[in-house]
Length: 152
Image 1: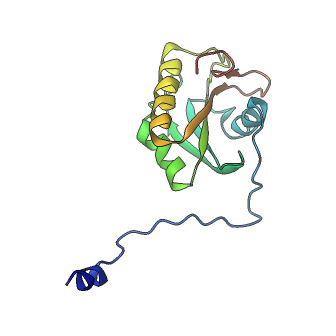
Image 2 (image 1 turned 60 degrees about the vertical axis):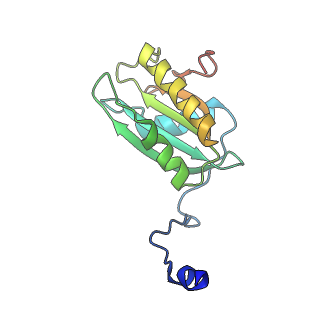
């Protein structure tokens, strides 16, 4: 009887990561500068705040880059579930998050720090480490690493 029930169970949803070889170089992140270079390329010159998630594998290679949220000129609503959804779906071992400041002043706000701490705590529960939270501008040399500043 139990065997008959097992045979009747069908897979409803199947999620599988498929990486197309040769489309995108899987860059290895070894320092905040490496991540800043990628983030600046994608969101540095945006005219509103954009929240980016870099999903990394166990070798710190980029598995995925995801524009998670687009906000206003001085704010972006960040939902923890949306940040980690992309990490889970892309087999992330860790993440680095980044957002831009359209004012070109990378100093973190209280909200920037609180969101980063909340993401770090959620990552601990999920087993997906938040390696850093970056604030970038249009100049890859003008950024803030919240980890380097001691906030994470």
